Length: 169
Image (cartoon, rainbow, N blue to C red; front, top):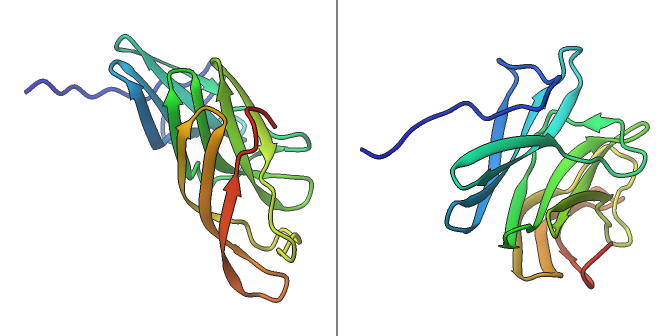
């Protein structure tokens, strides 16, 4: 009792059925949740979505891409954390000019932006591998850590720690 189900809303122009995915979520306050998901346009282009609940009503927008990004990869968003309402950090995968790359999605005061995820020196940047993200933690606004793994140019798997420095990119 007390539970209801609904289809995740999609932005205008997105496919309405058969291509949706709801992934990581965070609820920084009662009645205020954020879900990262994915859909595709009628022409088959993948788009990452940010769905937000406010006072029991859900809405979705297309997530931004980093500079040079062509479209979201069909691998879906990986992780999400919100320190407070309107202040979140998430990760996903996108298609750059000729390869896949991981991105960091940042919501600051309710506005979303995206940047390519930095990798340590010695990381394979050929695009054959992408970082595997397992968690995002944000104990305070501007103080987030992303953890996972990445491949080195020598083909070794290593642990990855990406720390936010300050409140912006």
